Image (tube, rainbow, N blue to C red; front, side):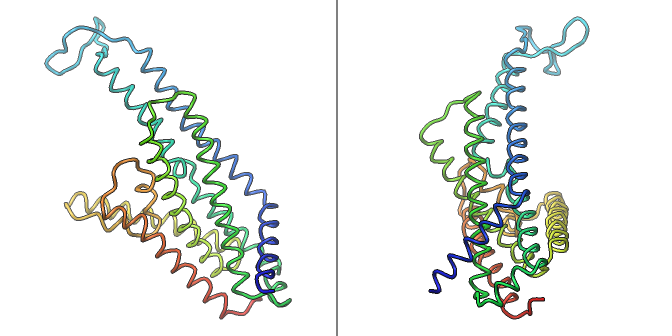
Length: 291
């Protein structure tokens, strides 16, 4: 019976989540962002292909100019620019979850979804009818995790389709790296979703949870940027920054070979943040009265 209760609760949450317009707006905006990213690659590739090159010897400054003093490009410059946009095209595929800004859209949807259910009395009604608070909490968490999975697959499929328009060499090893990046990006997005789910259960309203989540997102980014700049100037160790919340996506979306520290940051830390967020959010939900 308990399993059936959870199934009914999850089904109800998924139905309400599906009715949110923001879910589909997020899909549209994700596609626009991905398309614009690849459009930059296509334009850059076309410009590099049409670039006129010169056989003249560069001057002392390493630059070849025409009779009007305008710089000319060598074959080496053309090859370097072509390689740059080829790499950008490939990295956009590897980092599809990061390019699509899934964590930002999920943040907004989770805050609206949870806050709205508290504000309109849906959560209070469910609990008053005998639904376990544990089931109610995990039902929303699983619903949001399903949304993250759908968004992640959507971003990967759209990126794959757009990548095929201007394909670059892609081997079996590259496919393995792609699957690694996709899995790590999904795990990182589940981690950030859990943090925003915790904030939503702490605030219990769409407006306040959105405000706190966006504030946390922006302030953390600014503070860490300042810290990283100071450490870079002073020559300090910056490795510990990757272990902080919301800092794992850059590593997860990288196609480079990951070291031990990076693997710990991108595999272990997401699980730590998931467990901590669920623990705090659930403990708060169990102890506080629902108004």
